[in-house]
Length: 163
Image 1 (cartoon, rainbow, N blue to C red):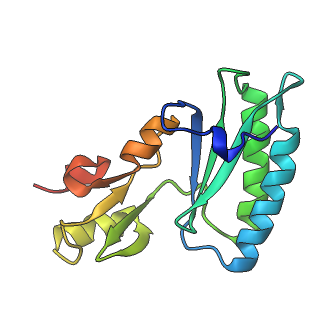
Image 2 (cartoon, one colour; image 1 turned 120 degrees about the vertical axis):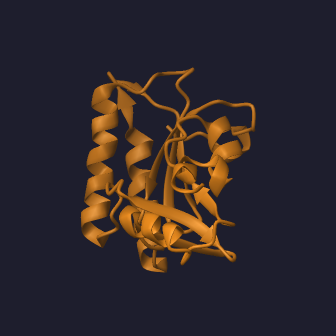
Image 3 (cartoon, rainbow, N blue to C red; image 1 turned 30 degrees about the vertical axis):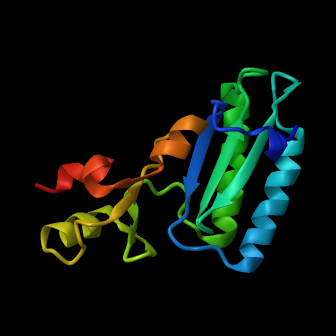
């Protein structure tokens, strides 16, 4: 069951699950991902009860799934089912959706994603500016996603890599 866009307001604290890709999606990939997720979410359920959910493709590189757990909580089995669909998408397009050892950030207005070790090295050696904003994929509520998804380096999880 789909959460209508008009019902998502900044005060709604839906559960959020973020799948970050290692690169931007092509137009064809975005279309296929959208179709697969619409089909899946239309029938997504926990213990036979429909889950009110929605998704958006953010920055053409991140898949954000929202579920209204005030109506029905996602169960372990339902989260596993979502993971299965996301793994199919990941394998079909080689997106790196499950690779958590990467960093995504905005530098000079450009979204960049790289291996975490290269990111740390780039910061240490000055190849990456300390005046960047870093994406935080650990946000698990809609309000946190809206307010803290993209933070200045020093306020982000990656702030531990700078003086």
